[in-house]
Image 1 (cartoon, rainbow, N blue to C red):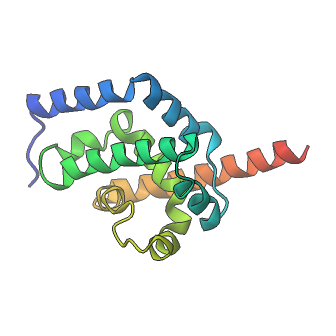
Image 2: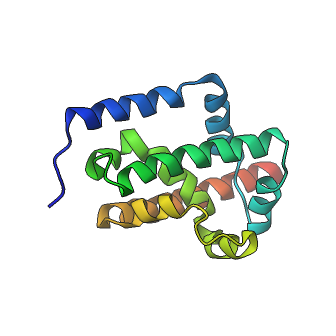
Length: 153
């Protein structure tokens, strides 16, 4: 049975939240949430290897943040149930849902089987997480379609 969340877990969640409020991190999170909608593995690869660009910085900053936070859970430093609350890690599901359709090919192309692996492990560890990912993948696809329609008109 998983340990109950502690006051220390709550404090770590608040510290993680504080990191998300930093000015550049807000820009990076906004880019991931509202501008970055890859249509293919090549779209992800373009940003992932566009070293020195603002988009690459933002890609790495947000991906690194969520991979770090997921590692806390995987290694037992942070309560999983608390971390998976939508108000805590909802953004993580959105981020992973955007690359999920391409994750296997991404790992092959970058030559790194651990690429986004912490996120995947935390997200898919529970039935709730797997269900939430399914929901978010559908939502991201709907948002992709809306964006495509807006660009076409």
